Structures are given as C-alpha cells and as structure tokens.
Figure 1 (cartoon, rainbow, N blue to C red):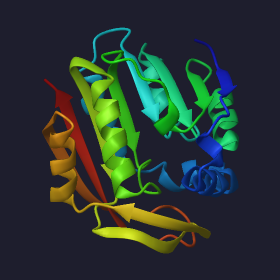
Figure 2 (figure 1 turned 180 degrees about the horizontal axis):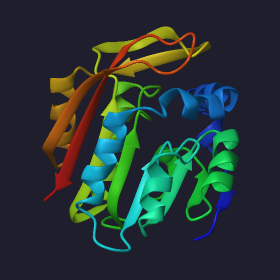
Figure 3 (figure 1 turned 90 degrees about the horizontal axis):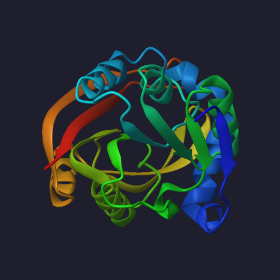
Figure 4 (figure 1 turned 180 degrees about the vertical axis):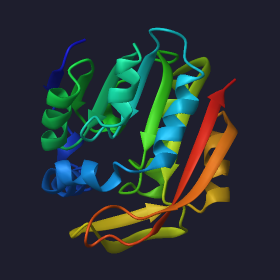
Length: 222
C-alpha cells in the first residue's frame, strides 16, 4: 500500500455522531497532532504492540487522525496498516504524511470486517463521541476482526460520563465514556483479555486544553 486515501461515503457521515465527529476533527486538523505529539504513554503503548507483532502484520488503526504517531510508527516498522477516520481533512493529511499506509474516510461502525482478518487493532481515543451501546458493539466487532492471538490496544479518557456536552481544544463535543473497571468489563465481554494497562495524567499542548486522565488497555484475543 502506498499513501492512498479513499472516501467511502454511505450511511457513515449522515449519522449525527459521525457528522459531529467529522466536523470537530476537520476543524482541528494538524493542531490535534501537535497537541498530543508529546504523549510518552502513547509511544510506550505502540512499543508494547510492536513487541507482539510478527513481520508484515496487518493492523487496523481506528480513528487514525493525521496518521501520526500510530500508523507512521507501525508502517515504518514494516507492517501493513489500514487507517480509518470519519474526517476527510484528517484522511487527506494522513495520506500525505504516511505514504506507506492506506487510509479510508469511513465510519468504523460501517467498515466491513472479516472475522480474523487483522493481527492487531488500535483504538486510540476514537470511541468518546459514540454512545455506550455503540462503543460496546464496535469493540465486539473489532475483537472478532482479530485473528486468534491477535492484539487490541484501546485508549480513552476513563470517566463515568454519558452524553455530556464539553469543549475540546475549542470545539464543542458530546462525550460518553466508561470508568476504568467498566471499560475492562466491556473488553472482557468482547472476548479479550487485558494483558497490561497504564494510567497517566496528560495535558495536551494547546492553550485551551486542561489535564485529563488517559487509560491505555493492552489486550489479547485468545
């Protein structure tokens, strides 16, 4: 694959959650990458994943954003990366910045997934604008998309909130999340085992950002 960007438009961007997320990340563009570029926990998470992958593994990056650092790190390590995002602006940026990977503008909820078709799935902070039922359903689908022995890395802001209106880097968002224990239960119901986790407090590099808790769950499929 080489720096391709596809726009698969169907029901994905007509959905309210999809439209809202696309507007937010279209507006943020490269500012999002800058704000989170210094996350050492994210890079440690990627190192954990790289340590479990065999050469040429197939990896799905859900909510791939600008392609950095996730798709870039994995693709440059020799893995076959497919990134999906609802934001056309992010997809175009990622395709330019990480020509070694493939990117598609599509809602992950609408992405066809063949069972056992990926060696790993990355879900870094891409569930927060979905409701709880949608988050649970998507994690279940992604888990089934893993081959036996595959890995799923999930990162989120571990708060017990549902449908809360907030402002993120100057953009209005509606946030839903799970506290840490509830999120661990969610991945367990999806058939995944939490192998490692990390909790950190992180402040994005943005004038309107505030410190926020980050939880990284590193999971395996039996």
